[in-house]
Amino acid sequence: MPISNRRLLPRADPGRPAKRTVPPAPAVSSLRDATPPALPFTPAERRLIARLRTPDAVQRWLNSLPYNTERGGETLRSFRGIARAGTVHCFEAAMAAAVVLEQHGYPPLVLSFESIDLLDHVLFVYRGPRGWGSVARSRDPGLHGRKPLFATPRALALSYFEGYIDFTGRISAYAVVDLRVLGRYDWRLAETNIWKAERMLLEWPHRSVASSDRRAERLRRRYRAFVTAHGYKPWKHYRGRERWTALPPEFRYRG
Image 1: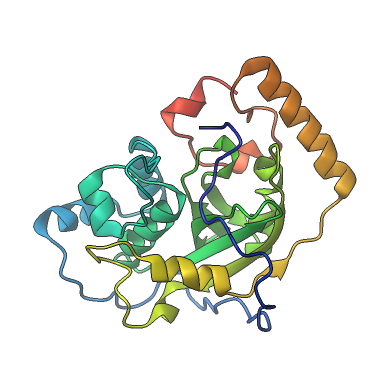
Image 2: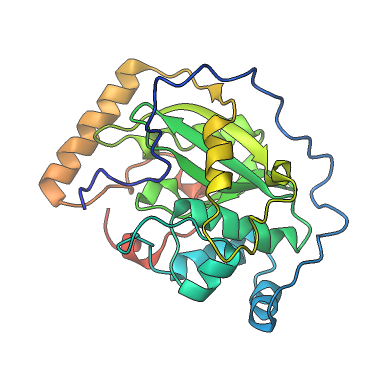
């Protein structure tokens, strides 16, 4: 697999009609919702959810799972499918985190990125006592979780700008979406792929992110030089790493 092929959600039709007006971000008046939905979890799923009570715990669990490279064909599993398969990719990680943490009172919010190379990224986001944070999984070290220290979802989104730069990527827009807009669609426990959730995010209006061409090209040159010299992706020279959550084992001892 090419080292630059790192995300999910390829937008195959850049010529599609213009999106509707960008809606406001979901209102989060409290850190937790009062009552999580009652769902038919299996005993094993209930035990897993009971163990994963915090965003940090969910991030550690996702870090422990092998990355789903979809060798048998494209997948977009629900939490049930992920728990059964024991592998996860970026979109699946966001959905799994949303299901688990919803049971502990967190609203099921995801942050969707759009990129100039049409390879997008999705993460679960939440608001803690000191700010916004995220839970995420990726083939790129700079696109994992963030500690809840960001004043706004936009500030959280901008913390991913540097880590998103590789041979072709650059954040162009973002959106925060409450997965409950999917209504009665079973994105939580479906036995089949939950493609409707992906289509919803692809069609959802995103807010543009203005950024410096000069900075982006400087970061891209540095990325290209590092990968050419070392053969793997960098992360230790990224700014703001003190606000990252722990990385999966495959990234910790190099970069």
